[in-house]
Image (cartoon, rainbow, N blue to C red):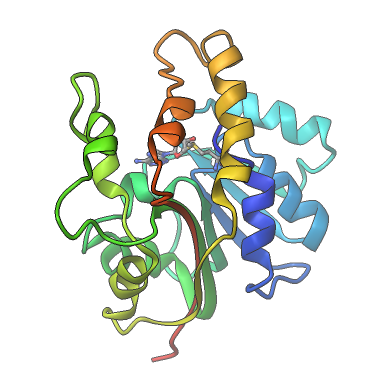
Amino acid sequence: MGPNPLQLLEELCGNLKLSAGMKVLDMGCGKGLTSVFLAKEFGVTVFANDLWIDPGENLGRFEAAGVSDRVFPIRAEAHALPYAKGFFDAAIAIDSYHYFGADELYFPCTFSKFVKPGGQFGIVVPGLMQEFENGCPENLRPFWFGENVDGEMFSFHSAAWWRSLWEKTGIVNITSCRNIPDPKEIWYPWAHWGKAFGKEHFGHDFTGDDVEFLDADTENQIALIALTAVKNSR
Ligand SMILES: C[S@@+](CC[C@H](N)C(=O)[O-])C[C@H]1O[C@@H](n2cnc3c(N)ncnc32)[C@H](O)[C@@H]1O
């Protein structure tokens, strides 16, 4: 549902320590490809949590992949998660955390609570190489301020911004925070696929303007950011 989720997850896993039997929250898992990968690659149990995708549909995919005994499809909104505090060994989110987690409160008041002390967090978000110091540049303005945009782009921030958002809470130690190399090489194939087949696949609301968006980014300001952290014991 976004730029190569499996490649983004692999970029993240290099900085996570996952082992068989761990319980992992895959937040905003979409169609659950990352959840299947986590179960097969690491033998972890995955709670495949999403909002837009029907969990029944995801269950069919988990059964077909032979992992339905350890990947559980859940539909829950990010601010109304049904899990016990400290339940998970790790929580990850691929190309989804920026939709709900780019405010000051979400990490300390919600997301961090579901992972046990010593547990891990890992997210990959689309963002910016640097914060816009003089406002949104002209070439990108249609995507931030255009007629049919919904304001979602204001969740795009730099790696340093994301690091600070979590670090200042004192809840975690940041273990890695970096821009994934060559983000457009990862993003363009998805963008071209979306332009060609997105409406057919996701319905007519699908805007599919990622090609135009990436083309407009002539200064290469768009980034894919990978952030990992470990929860402090206290
Ligand atoms: C761009 S898709 C990415 C899906 C998947 N991780 C991938 O990379 O293909 C973003 C996902 O975030 C989920 N999401 C967005 N807002 C959410 C919210 N408020 N609560 C829970 N999930 C949310 C959507 O359901 C959607 O599947």
